[in-house]
Length: 304
Image 1 (spheres, helix red, strand yellow):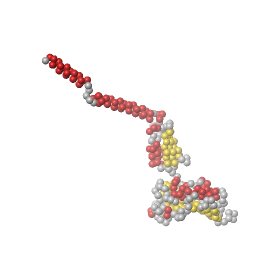
Image 2: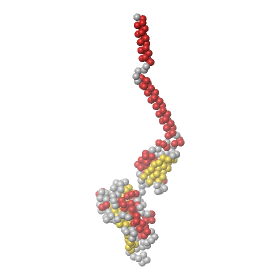
Image 3: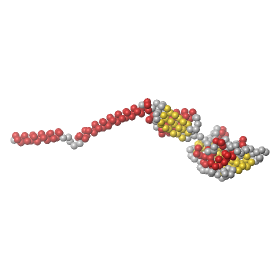
Image 4: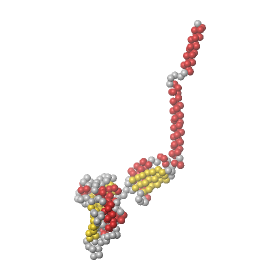
C-alpha cells in the first residue's frame, strides 16, 4: 500500500511539474506582443519628436518671400500676391505647401500664371505673370452677337493666345454702346470682326476665340514694337481677310494682310515698308498679301 501511494504521488508530482514548467500553447506569444507594441510606440514618439524639432527649428524657418512680377515693375500686384500667399518669415519652411499657396493666389489675384518654389535655405519664391489685354475685340451691331446688348457694339478684352479676358460693360442701358472711356482706358489695339464669326456669342472669359478670330487676335498680339504705334486698328472682314488702319496722323491708310496665313512674312514686309522706308504722305494702301512683292497705292505724289 505504501509503495502504491508513493508511486501515485510521484506520478502526480511529475505531472504537476510538467504543467507548471511548460506554458500553455500561445501564452508566450501573447505575452510578448504588448512589449513590442510599446517599443514601436516609443520609437514613433521619439522619431516624431525629432522630425518636429527639425521642422520647427529656426534654421528651417522661412527667411524671405520673394514675389517676382514678369515683364513689369508692379509693386501693387506684388504686395497683393504677398498678402494672399499668407507665407511669413519665421513660418516653418518645410510646411509651406506650394500648391496651396498657388491656389490662394489664383483665387484672389487672378493672374495669368503663378509658380511657387521653395528654395533652400528658407526662401519662398512666387513668380506671377499679370493678366494683360493684347486687343479690344469689337463686334458691331445691329443686333450684335448677344440679344441683350441690342443694336450697340459688343466689346471684350482679349488676352494672350486669343482668349477672352472679360466683356466690357455697356452701362445701364443694354441697348447702348459701351462707354468710350471704358475702352480708351485699355491701352491695346482694336480688332473689329464681323458678327458672323461669332454666331453663338462671345466665348466665356478664359475661353479661346473661334477661328479665324483667334488667329487675327494672335497676329495683333505678336506685332513687333516698331509697328505697335502704327497698326493700332485691325479689322477682320466677312471674307476672313485681315486689314490694319494707320492712325489719323498717317492719313488712315490701309495695310492689307489678306487671309491670316504667312503672318510672320507679312509682318516683316509691312515693317520693312513702314519703318523709315516709305513716305507715308498720300499713302492709301499698302498691300502685303504677297509678302515677297508688296505694293503701294497713293492718292497723290508725296512731293505734290
